[in-house]
Image (cartoon, rainbow, N blue to C red; front, side):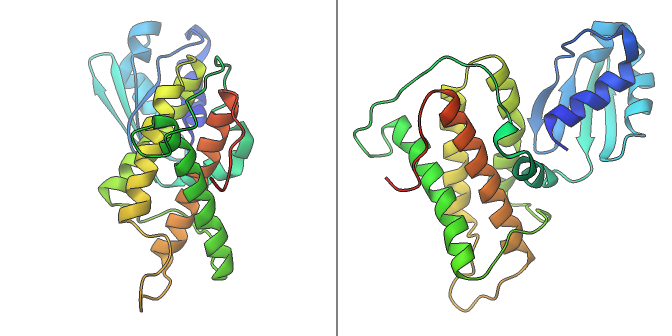
Length: 224
């Protein structure tokens, strides 16, 4: 489920008494928090019970008036980002530009642009190998979980117009996955479901980085 789908489920659970902003935010891979009960006056346990009936939501924990919502398959967010494409995380933000040089990791703009180029390269190489992305299940490495959490955060940063710093964090998260969780088989390793899942995750990161760069006024480049 995307953050928008989780928020829609929450709005449905609240009903007509809900304000337009229920304060939903991503707390981790597939975990979302909201003070909806405090903002609406609806009993938190009633909201939790309604939400747990929504397909795709696995569990809702209550802490006072705060809801902690866990989706059934956190990795599915990557597939949802791919499905939404250019619509994912879109918001109205101020134009922003990092300097083009130095082209080193000390330049946060380079880290973002290079992350996009790396994500695009994963897709190209996968196609060259005749491999395709698959359902993103089994993404259990800490780096993969961290990247899924960042993908879940993106709509909130875009909505509030504070995107440039977030894009650096997203880029760093993808670099960690790229370097430690190979999407393509290494050596004598045979292709498996985990590689297909990582190809989908890389495509989701590519789309998110592309959308973010376009929002701040840059044209994403697949080769630097």
